[in-house]
Image (tube, rainbow, N blue to C red; front, side):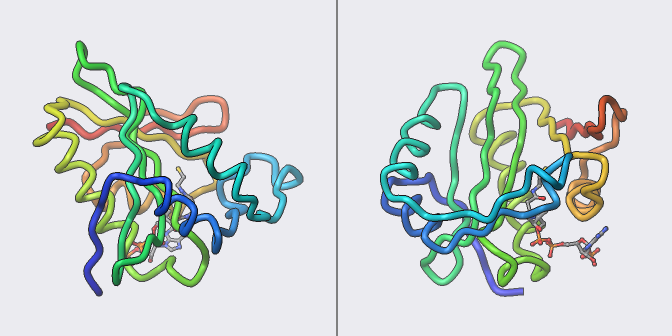
Length: 156
Ligand SMILES: CC(C)(COP(=O)(O)OP(=O)(O)OC[C@H]1O[C@@H](n2cnc3c(N)ncnc32)[C@H](O)[C@@H]1OP(=O)(O)O)[C@@H](O)C(=O)NCCC(=O)NCCS
């Protein structure tokens, strides 16, 4: 597998990421809600701004100096020392090469060692078995299934 890294998302990285973005049907509970993605610079700017918060770290997943996905540590609870991981790679051309697995491992290390978290949560819709497999591969433990979602947790 080629090397990837995580870097704090900038406005420029966010624009570059979403220029070649594809929505993935795997994250839609009701596949009828799936719509192909259409790039719009102003919408991406607003998206980027909406993610700036003390309770969230938004990363770009970088390969060969280019963004190939985004990963978030969100719902950061500084008192309880826990947060929630979410990830979405840019398009099908970068899926299935091990980059998601590598990015999640780096994010767990960042959450525990840099942010001082004691637990990281994650959830996927029940049908998203690829995401569940990757979460388990990097050490998340399955907690429960509720309302169409499977919940996972990784403890420091
Ligand atoms: C989920 C995602 C982050 C995984 O990243 P990735 O780089 O594609 O995954 P990897 O190549 O690191 O690993 C994929 C693993 O899943 C396995 N896999 C592939 N399709 C699968 C399926 N339908 N069911 C179960 N496992 C599957 C692969 O065999 C591989 O496991 P292995 O290494 O043990 O052989 C990425 O595919 C993605 O962004 N998907 C769309 C958005 C999404 O689903 N995000 C998660 C929402 S909670």
